[in-house]
Amino acid sequence: MSTADMNRWKGKVAFVTGANGGIGMAITRRLLHLDLAVVAIDKQTDHLLELKDEIKTTSLYPLNVDLCHEEEIIRAFQWVEEMFGGIDVLVNNAGVGGRSTLIDGTVSEWKKILDVNVIALSVCSREAVKSMTSRNLENAHIIHLSSNLAHFVPAYGPFHFYSATKHAVRALTEGLRQELRALKSPIRVTCISPGLVKSSIFKNSLGENFDKHLYDNHPSISPADVASTIEFILSTPPHVQVQDIIIKPVGSEA
Image 1 (cartoon, rainbow, N blue to C red):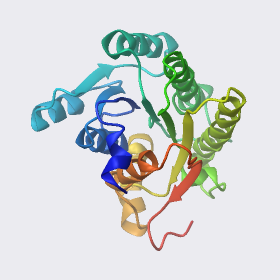
Image 2 (spheres, rainbow, N blue to C red):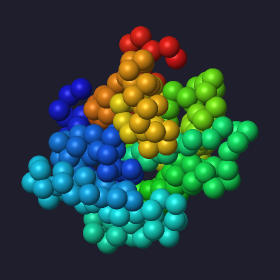
Image 3 (tube, rainbow, N blue to C red):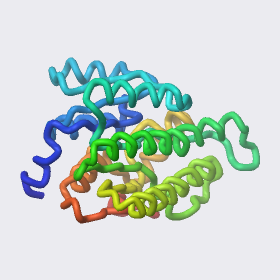
Image 4 (cartoon, helix red, strand yellow):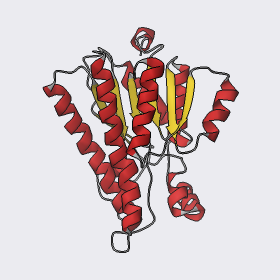
C-alpha cells in the first residue's frame, strides 16, 4: 500500500468497540500508529488507560460503555460529536460467546450474545451513518468483525448460537451496503471473517481448559494480523468496495 493511500486518514476519528483487549486493542494500536484519533469503547477501560500511559498518546480516548444499553452507545456518539464533530471510521469489533448449546441454552445468555454481537453493532452502524452523512464525507468506512463461523455451521454445540449471530453480521453488512447504495452514499462497509484468533473470547465464555485445548490443537492467527487487515482495507481507493474478507491461519481445518 502507498503512503498516500493512508495519508487521507491522518487526523481522522475512529470509533472502536470492544477495544479493551484482544483484537480491539490491536486495532486501536494500529489506528493510533496510523495517526488517527481513536475513541475506544468497552465495558472496562483499564487496559486502554494503561496503553494510553505506555505510548504517551493524546489521541486515544477510552470511554466506558455497556453495549447492552442503547442509551450508553448514543451518549458515546454524542460525546464524539461534541468533541470532534463526528467519526470517519467505525470498527464494530465487540463480540461475546456463550457456554450453552441450542438444546440447553438460556434466554438470558442468548439475549446477551444478541445484544452485543447484533443489536449493538446495528446501533453503532446507524449512529455512524448519521454522523458520516451529516458531514457529507467522501472518505468514510464501517468495518464489521464477523467470523469464519459465519460461513458454515460448526459441529460444536456451544458455538451454534454464536455462529448464528455472525451469520447475521454478514447479512447486516450486505443490507447496509444496499441501503447506502440506494442513498448514493460513498460510505463503504466491510465484513472481516477471521478464523481462530489468539484472544480471550472463548476463555471468557468456555473456561481456561477449553481455551488451552483449543489453541494447543489448532493453528491460530494473532490480533495484530486482524489489525493489519483493517489497515489494508482502509488503504484501498475510495471507489473500491472490499465487502467480505476471510483471513485464517495456514493449515486450519475450516
